[in-house]
Image (cartoon, rainbow over all chains, first blue to last red; front, side):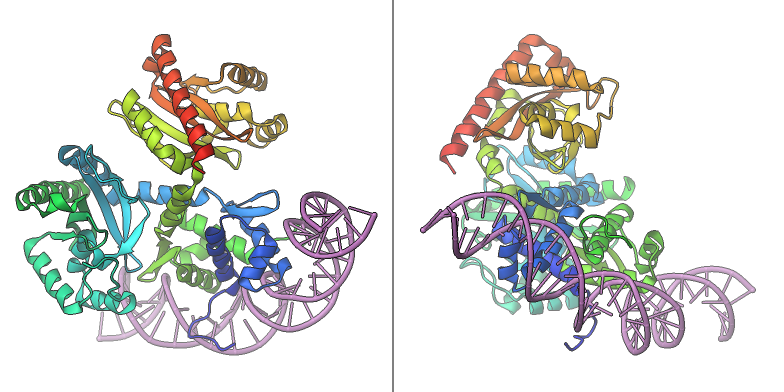
Length: 254
Length: 254
DNA sequence: TTAAGTCGTTCGATTATAGTGGACGACGAG
DNA sequence: CTCGTCGTCCACTATAATCGAACGACTTAA
């Protein structure tokens, strides 16, 4: 095998491949893993046993599945995160005040990662939850982040991720996106509806810490509500107040 | 090296050890990992680069840290879990009805794992969150599960985990615990206050699916409230109704 | 400005270790 | 009862993880 640039450890990569397969199939024994990955059964067995020893995989009665340790580690990462700790209460207050769904997102691996959600009494019940990822260009929070990233990062993201549509309204044209990012920089906030999910719209404002974008806060509403300009202005104003509070609290509480 | 019973893959185990260390130190370069784990710097580097390739570790500017992929994978595991999907809405209703903090827990690796929490208007603001783990014997939900587990599993758990106290009220005597488990089986519910956290109390009821305990639901309150017998009875009744609903919904919605 | 000490990263030789086929007992189906 | 599956275990072999040394980029101190 030719060394593809920089070499990595095949065994560790394969262990994580098995984790991915275990995710897909929920539960499996060595035989099934072996056939799915085209490796000998005995090899699959050693991997599974090793992964079970780490605690990230659990063996019940010969079959293996992913354990809740992923949830444990992931949640711990979230709850120790400075941005989350600073924001949590303020996001709850914003959700209570607006009665809408509030989200805190960050960028990682060229994607939007939802770090936290707070629900209000009238909030949309979509499948949005902490840990979910979406493309950056399909929603207001992602665009708010993109607008604050250096140009070369934006180029890189567009090149590697493309501008895949997820609804008919998703922005797919690069020049359209770039001009909207400029508008967002001017206005200080981003808006979208039906671009990620039909019937869903949101407003988003980036959080900047030390001249760098640390994430964004969004308010998610039904398209009908966010389309109303007056209501939208109200949301944006309250959102901006929350983001300002987060920024200040971050600076002095950390 | 002598083979300690069944052999495992040292490289995969070491990769997860590095993940643990990365968790502890938040961010680190190859040198720091190398000294902490007593391995050569170049070895640490290969591991880190490989882990970065999996996406579970992220490399910013030479230093490495755990990525949000743990949160992503963990949340996905949670949200596709049948018990959670069946319970989520009912737990929300219970929280709204009682105005208290409601938790859904399961057992894994001899511990209580909080799968989900729903907050009510008066609910305690403790650091309880989805993904957190606690010893089984320190709270009502854990004891509710223990009461339904086969005797040999209980023996095993007590032997490997012990009965470590976390407050002055924690049950540390095995015979006291066993007799309480028998009481819980009779009554159908478990109660505790100040056993896990001083000032916190809860009632818990196990969820049984196909003659097996699948988890437990708990209502978390300030000690003062749960100590009131009348209030406690009200909580237990509402809790029981919710658990019944979950059991029925699970049977027919799955 | 320079020099010494970091850092992260790369390379190649060595050797420990992951990969593998085959065998075993357990289980369920025919 | 038998056949075909399963998960698990073992031992040989060749691959891939290991590790020292060297590199360029930074930071610090002289």
